[in-house]
Length: 383
Ligand SMILES: Nc1ncnc2c1ncn2[C@@H]1O[C@H](COP(=O)(O)OP(=O)(O)O)[C@@H](O)[C@H]1O
Ligand SMILES: [Mg+2]
Image (cartoon, rainbow, N blue to C red; front, side, top):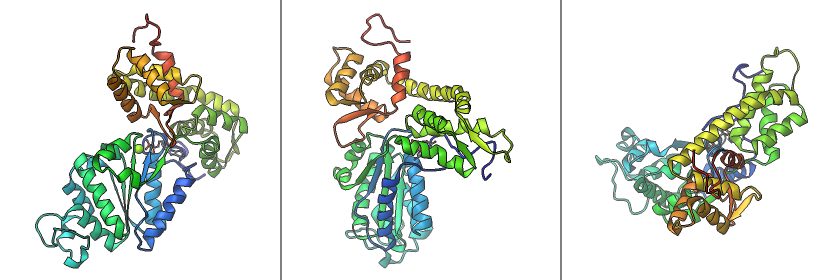
C-alpha cells in the first residue's frame, strides 16, 4: 500500500496529474528526441504544439514534459499560462527578473539585430531575454492554454521563438484547444506550418485499460477482465472519464482492510456506476450550459443527431447539421461562426489531417439527444 487509502491514486479534474500517463508514447518519444537535442546544446528542429478538446490530457502531457525535461534531461524549464504573461514586459520579467537582466554582461546577449544593451533601465526585448537564458542553460518554455494568448504578446513570443530557436537550445511547447491553429495564425502566419503538431484525443481501449489497471496493480489491487472492459468502454477512452472511473472503483475497494487481498469484480463496477453517471452528467451539464450561453443548443443537438449513425462527419454533413439546428434561413456566415465556436469548445474537432470531424466527447452526443428537443420537430421548444 503506497497511496493514501481514502483518496487513492486516481485524479479526475482539469490539470490533475494522472497516476499513469497512458497512450501518449508517440508524443513522449518525439518530445524526448527534441529534449535530447537541447541537452547537447543544439537548437530543436521546430516548436511543438499539442491541441485537442478539453479533458484529453494536454495539461497532463505538459506536466510530464516539464518533469522529463528538468529531471531526466537536466534542462531549464519555465511553465507559464497566458494569464501570467499578459504583456511582453510581464513575460520578459517572468523569464528574466530585473535583478538578473541588470547584471547581464554585454556579451551574453547574442541574438542578431538586437536594439537592447545590458545595463539599460528598460527590460530587454523578449528575444534577448530568451537568448540570455538559453545561452546560460538549454531552455524549454511550456505554455498551456495558448489559445488565450493576447495577440500582441503571442506574436512577440512566436517571432522570438523562431529567431532564438534557430541558433540556440530553446524549445517552445504550446497546448491549446482544437481551434488554436486559427488563433496562432493571427499572431504569426508561418508558425503552424513550422511546428510539430500533435492532436491529443481520446485513448484507445488498450491505453484506457492500462490507465486504470496499472495504478491499481501498483496498489496490489487486481481487476477482473469484465470489470475492466466495462470501465474502458463506458469511458469511451475520454481521459477525464477514465479517472472518474478510477476514483469510483477505488472508493468501492478501499474500505477493505489493506492486508486483505483485493480484487475488483464486475459487481464492484456495477455498484460504482450510479456515482460515475452522476459525475458524468454534471460534466455534460457544464457543456450544455456553455452551448446554451452561446445560443448553440439546437445546432449542437442537430450535430449530435448527425453523429448517431456515424463516427465521423465530412464538411458538408457538419454544415448541413448546423444549418438544420440554426434554421434553414440562416446565413453561411452564421454557420461558419457556429462551427468555429463548436470547435473552440471541443464539441467537434478534427484529430486527423483529413477534413473529417469527430465528436470531442461521443457520449455527450447522447446527452444532447436526450435533453435538447430535435430541431427537425417543429413543435419542439427549447427548455
Ligand atoms: N494519458 C492519460 N492517461 C490517463 N489519464 C489522463 C491522461 N491524460 C490526462 N488524464 C486525466 O484526464 C483529465 C484531464 O486532463 P487534462 O490534462 O486536464 O486535460 P486537458 O488539459 O486536455 O483539458 C485529468 O483528470 C487527468 O488526470
Ligand atoms: Mg488543460
